[in-house]
Length: 87
Image 1: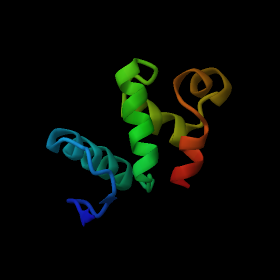
Image 2: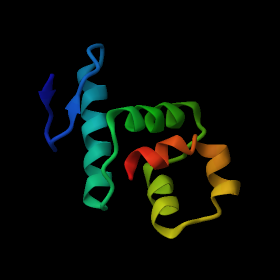
Image 3: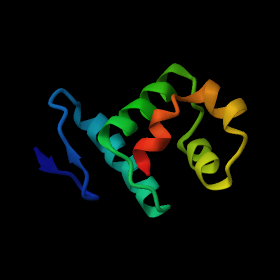
């Protein structure tokens, strides 16, 4: 295991260099905005973005910071466990 730029420890062994960079970039984005996501939470967010269930990381941040109606937005976009993993 090695620390990537930004301080996150990535434990996954089968990540491409491109995906590692995306994880670090996403981690740094949330870190800069006051949220400390786990590797698992980042994988879940990026996976759901790939499925089209989450449209952008900005949507996740907006929901976290502005408290949009979680039942309407988050129930469709992502599992609530992701939010609790970042707290």
